[in-house]
Structures are given as C-alpha cells and as structure tokens.
Length: 436
Ligand code: DSN
Image (cartoon, rainbow, N blue to C red; front, side, top):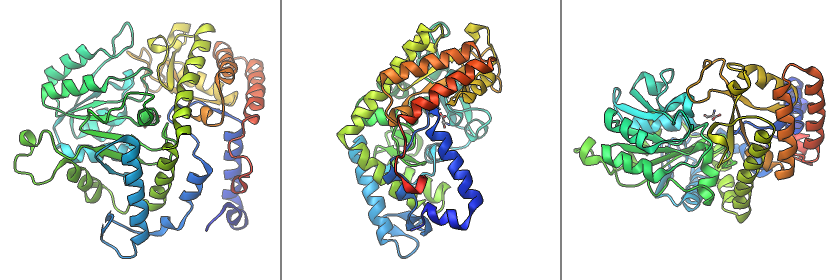
C-alpha cells in the first residue's frame, strides 16, 4: 500500500510541500465553513488499491471485469448512506458537489428550462443559477433574495418569485446562509408551481443526518450533498432521491425511467466516466463513522461552537448577517465598520494571524464579487480538532482584534502567537506517522 514514507524516498519535492501543508493545518485555525478534517481511517481508505480500478456502471452491472470488491464497497457505501439519511435511493459516485448538481440538471431539465435558486450574494451557490456557471449559461436562471432588512429567507417572497417565474427546478439549500432552512415550506412552493425540488444540503449534511437540523429527505424530490463538509468524509458527493418521479406525468409522459433511474443514468453515462473507487471506500468509512452516536454529539458541538463564536464577535462590536447563527456558519458585515469591499484585505490579515477564512459577498452586496464586504466563518473543522465554547471565545476575541486592527502588524503577530499555542493543544493527527 502506498504510504508517505515512500514519497519521502522517491519525491523529496512533493514530500516537503506535503509537510508544509501539514504544518499549516496543525498550527492554524481553519474557519472556512465548507472545510473539515477527515479521520485517519478515511484518510487511509483514500490511499488504497481501489484508486486503480475502472468500474463504469453500478454494483452488479459493470462494463469491466474484476469488480467484485468494488461492488462490495460501493454496496456498503450505499446501504450505510440510506441508513444514515433515511433516503429511498442514493448514487454515491458523483466526483464533487458541482458535478452532482450538474447530474441533477441533466436528469430533470432540458437546456433552456427555468431554474430558481437563492441569489449568489444572498448565500446561494454558483451551480444554483449563477450566470458564470453552466447553471446560468445553459438554463434560464432566476433567483429569490433574502429580506433586505433582516437578511432572513422570506418564504412568501420565494413563493411570489416562483409563481412569477414558474421554474421547472426550485433549489433550496445554501452556501452562506446562517439560519435553519424550512425544507417543507420549499416543497409546498414547488408543489404549488409544479417544480422539482432539489435540496442542496452540502453545508448542513452532517446536521441533517443526525437530526441537529431538520432533514430535507422527507420533502425534496432530490437531495444533493458533498461528503467533505459537515459530513466529515472524503472530497466527493452523493445524490439521494425518491424512487418515483412525482412530476413524470407533467414533464416526461412517455418516459420509462423512474426518478432513481434518471439520476443514476445522468451520473453515468450522462456525465461521468469511471467512479473514483478509493473515494467510494472512504465514503463508506465516513458514513460508518457518521452512524456512531459520537457523530451526533460532534454535530451538536459544531452548532454550540458557532453560537459561542457569534456571541463573542457581536460582543466585540462586529455585525453578523441575520444577527447571529443557528447552524455552523456566520457572515461578518464589514461595511458596518466602514470597510465596504475590504473582504480580501481582512481575509489576508486573518490569514497572517493563522486564521483561515474566506471573503464573501453579503446580501445586497455594496462592493463587488471580487471585492466583497463579508467574511464567512464556520466551526466544523475546529470542532473536529476538539475546540469547545471556551476556545471559540478565545478565537473570537482574536478574530475581532485582527478585524478592528487589520493594518496593525503587531496586533496580528500577537494574535498569531496565541492561535498557534491554542492549536498546539489540539493536534489534528497526533502520532500519524504518514503525516509526520
Ligand atoms: N466551495 C464551497 C463553499 O465554500 O461553500 C461550495 O461549493
């Protein structure tokens, strides 16, 4: 089995880059809400012989020979995923979140059909209809916004927009929205306008699986998610769906496939080639971990940590969209401090203090997508390494100090020292020789 000590011998250049990346993550507070750290078992599942195998098709129905063990591991991933989310059907092969969503479009839409998702600046995702993505280039893209005063989703506004635009696909689920989402309300709107409902739960999948956030599975026709965010699995995605096509009579009267078959054939041969079987093995391991009671505790702690961080930031004079958080993430409004369009500068200052965040648009962004006025923060990764509320308070105080003094090198250096000390108390991969 290939291990890191082989890289050390065969490729010193790559090996030294890997070591530098390990040092960066061990000594830094990773606050990007879409990132996490997988277990050693998940990491090791990646580095297996399964990376070498071609296996186009599904378990028991492959185009190449030699797939008996790929079938076993993919079947296990499917069964564990069904148990974890309580879904009727799942395809575990999507390479990542954007291809997973593209497969859903391919299964349900024709080019030119109308899609409706949340506007990008309000917290939507590029694949939910942004003009720079396939979703906005090949489809007629329409959007709903959050309320301008409260930054909150207004379901009456979503209904009004959906009734006006009549989308064939209505997307719920968001990348920068810090509050709970009412998937039942989205489903009711989809029913009213005759739209398919895709819930993209990538950010909150771990919480949905464990009941810490209400699940989309009972409502949405299709649910997509990456596996590497709060789900804490390998980089990849899955698409879950109901078996029956609720709108077949409307959109596909002569079609023979049910919804599950449409999703499967959109993934392959519609979009992808050979599945990444080493990632499927790692997904199976991660789903097994997520089925343990400790994973629910972890998801609860993510949310408690986010609240502790949000409270600290607000105590220290920062303003958050929606006035706080109910999930794993929050968005700081820099424009309130007179820092409109300064997200990049602040992100860079935080990075210099070993705090990794991302600049982000805020609702009704007064800057631009390249120079936005928000900083997005989340707690999944630091919660994995063991941070609890008291560490979040310490970190929040550091973050606030850097933001208020983002041009002061001395303040930044002092916060960096504290962050390194804090992180050293919570090593990520202690004693993992392949990652020394
Ligand atoms: N890039 C992810 C995020 O940061 O939210 C979404 O794809």
